[in-house]
Image (spheres, rainbow, N blue to C red):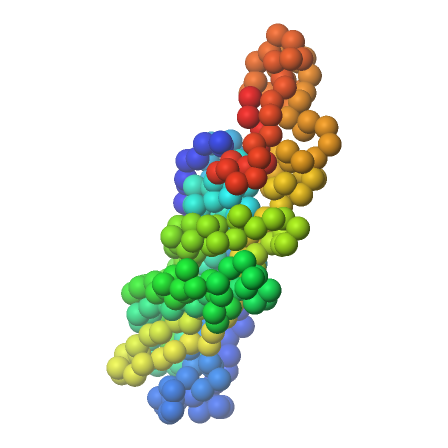
Amino acid sequence: MRITRWKPAGRTALAALIGLGLAAAPARGDNNPNGMAFRAVGWFKGKAEISASDIKCEIPNVTSAIFEGAFAMGIWNTYGVQTLMFPDTSNPFANPCGVWIQLQNNMVNQAVVIDRIELKFRIPGARRFRPFVNTARKFPVACREFRRDTLFIGARINPINSTEDTASSGVPNVAFIEMLPFVSNQLIQCLRAQYAPLPTTLFASLPLVVQATAFGTSDSGDSFRSSSIAYTLNLRHTCGNGRVDDGESCDASAPGNACAGTCTGNKCSQNAALSCATDADCVGGCLPPGSTAECTCLY
């Protein structure tokens, strides 16, 4: 169990590869035909307990892991908590217990040491933004230095016939690797600089697809490359569209004032943390688009 302090502002089936001839002897060619000997299974997260001050995350295993593969958060912030990176273990709205990749070694007698996991980023449909953002190969040119990233791991995954579960996954030949950072602060800032100035009428969500491929070395010294799997992070861009969307506390362009409440028992109805004497003490303003805390209430 991982516990992080913060302040508010599937079970895997083992592949039977002996009949395919992949487990009895080293694979030929790319050492991993069809991604069967060394496999990236999918994306998972651990069970979470989130309170006003703590984020408790359970490390996933084959019986408790929760399948995922996509997430959405604000391009600037979510409910007033700034978007810094993804996932963010100190941000309850940034999937703090998520983005664990499950890797599986289906060889009978050879363990695999994971050297690294390579990441490649793209934005589907990025061409439609070309009149506003200089784009090449489905990515803004200004951010191309962040288009690829590498996480160095060093984890060992035992073979199928091993009796040792060194990765604490519940199965000897499976490991869950936490991807930190998956989307770096530098990339978030660069994408924000390119796309956040665009009007909400142009787009409401920016899909960032991350393709992950693991690389490892077997006991015999052979190199293995896993199958590739993708994760989608949707960066929402809705502040200023005239309605209060998920992840927002208010919208400066919306009718009425979502930041106004009433005073009852010396506490404001919309925010119990606010003390008051009259209803006037419970009236705030909505921060406009373009600020770090856009579409949140300021009192």
